Image 1 (cartoon, rainbow over the protein chains, first blue to last red):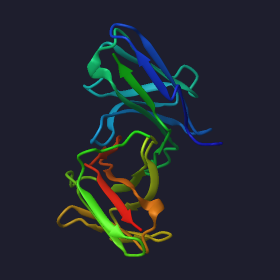
Image 2 (cartoon, helix red, strand yellow; image 1 turned 90 degrees about the vertical axis):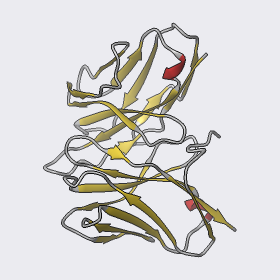
Image 3 (cartoon, rainbow over the protein chains, first blue to last red; image 1 turned 180 degrees about the vertical axis):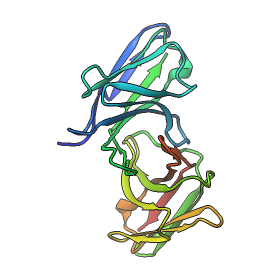
Image 4 (cartoon, rainbow over the protein chains, first blue to last red; image 1 turned 60 degrees about the vertical axis):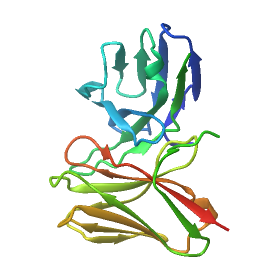
Length: 115
Length: 110
């Protein structure tokens, strides 16, 4: 499978715990995006990387959230001291930005439930 | 599986009929648009895209129409099949990030 993969697919945690999600983009894609999606809504942008550089962060990304893409390949999204409001689907997407083309392909998502 | 979009607008069509899903976008500077399909418990799947220098683009059984004057996109699905049942999102690209509109749930009746 050469698509975007995410791990784990589901995570249940207790409030106050830390969680980390992983995303493996499509090989050779230079951009990697993280989104959050709640029921009934479209995905909301959180942050993105071009290669290993984190270029933009949404105001939705509080200080408890941190993302890395250390070698410009896979990325991790960590949420510290989780809150019930963090319960959502966390989606990763990747793209090969060339000129003005930036078609993003999504992974299956990680469903986070905070009890 | 888990459902996406419990309170979304819903379009119900008969199998074999054509479907038209509409979307209003917000940013007149957007120059690239994408339609995504999202099935329950899955991530959004790319369907078709269009650039602002075009007003129509066709794919396999799908057509996207763009009306920049009124900032409106539509997705037409020909001969709708049960497998087309999903939530459909349009997304606009004014610069460096995609902005998604509210979705529409398509239900196909056999």
